[in-house]
Length: 122
Image: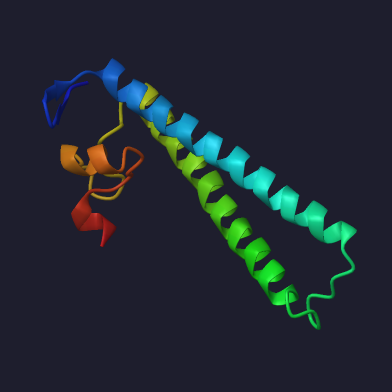
């Protein structure tokens, strides 16, 4: 499979490498966010903070909630790239799952795990 990239044609191997790099980056983010969340949990476990009545409690709860949301998003990115890698192996990568038309190379360059073309994404 060949797609057009910023510098010309991109091979299937290059596309696979981009997806693997995207997965590695997402996995690293999952690991970092997991460590941060665990640090907050561990530090609040040792403290006698009551989130509801402690002036710092809402900050701790907010940080925990924010990190949990970011972690969920990073885990979703890993799953999205895994799906893109499967589509790549099946030969359907770069094809819109809704209309069956090719996904623009520019969209794939920005979002390698894109499953739909721009028209179907809106």
